[in-house]
Image (tube, rainbow over all chains, first blue to last red; front, side):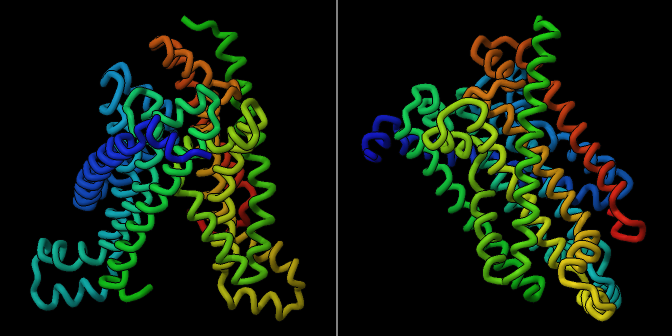
Length: 210
Length: 205
C-alpha cells in the first residue's frame, strides 16, 4: 500500500480543501435557512405540519437522484452539490429548532412571564437558549448528511474527495479506493466528533446534564 | 426517450436489490439489538460502532466494499446491508431498552420468563422506534441501490449513470423518478405494517 503515491497522484490535499469548502458553505447555508425556517414555523404553527411533511418527502428522495435533478437547472459541478446538501440538511435543523422552541417547560415560561418579559424577550432569552442543544443535535445530523452529499458530488464533476473515489472505481484500482475511501471516512468521523463536542457543551450549559 | 420495458426491468432489479438487502439487515439487526440487551458493555460497543459507521458517507462505503468483494450484485447487497443495518440496530435497541421499569417489574411479578417479557412486553413497546429505524433504513437502502450501479449492480442507478455519462436528461429522469416513487411507497408501506401490528394503546406516533 503506497499511501504517499496515491495522495500525490490524486492530489488529495487539493481535493480535501475543495471538499471542506463545499462542506462549510453547505452547512452554513443549511443552518441559516433551517433555523430561520424553524423560527418561522414557531410563529406560524398552522404551517408547521405541512411544511415538515413536504421536507420529509424530500428526505426520501435518493441522494443521487436529487443531485441529478438539479443538473438541468444548475448545471454540473459545485452548485447542484451545494443545493442538494442544503436541501437535505434543512429538515433535521428546522425540525429540531421548531421542536426545541415549542417544547419549553411551562414553569420556565411562567417565571419569565411573572418577571414581566415580553413575548419577544421570552423567545430570545428563554426559548432560544433552551432550544440550542436540540438545534445542535439537528446540526450534527446535518453534518453527516452534508458530508455524504458532498462526497457524491464527485460523480457530477464537483471535485472534492468523491472524485478520487470515482477514479478508483473506474480504474478498479484498489489502492486509490481504499486510501481515498478511508480518508473520507476519517474526515467524516472527525467532523462528527467536533459537532458532538459542541452539542455536549451546549447540552451541559443549557439543559442541565440530561 | 427510454423504452418502458427498459424502465420496468431496471425497476424490478432495483426492487430486488433494495428488499433483499433490507431483509438481510432486518434479520441481522433485530437479533443484534436483542443481544445488546444482555449486557451494558456489549450495548455500548454496538452503539459506538453504529455511530462511527453512520458518519461515513455512503459513497465511501460502496467504494470500500469493492477491494474486499469485487464488483457486481453481491458486493452491492453487502454495501446496502451494511448501510441499512445500523439505524435498525440502534433504534430497536433504544426502543427495547427504554421500556418503563415498572412494566417489566409487573411482568416479572406475574411470572413471565425473560424471553416472554422480550416478546410480549418489550417488543410491542419498541415498535414505534423500531419502525422509525426500519423506514429510515429502507429509504437509505433505496438511495444506495442507485449508487451501487457504479459497481455494476444494475437497477435504476444504471439508467441514471448512463444518463449522466451522455448528459441525457430523459435517461436521468427515467432512472430517478421511479426511484423517488419507490422510496415514497416503501415509507408508506412500512407505516401501514407498523399500524397493523402495533397493539392498541401503545404509542400513537
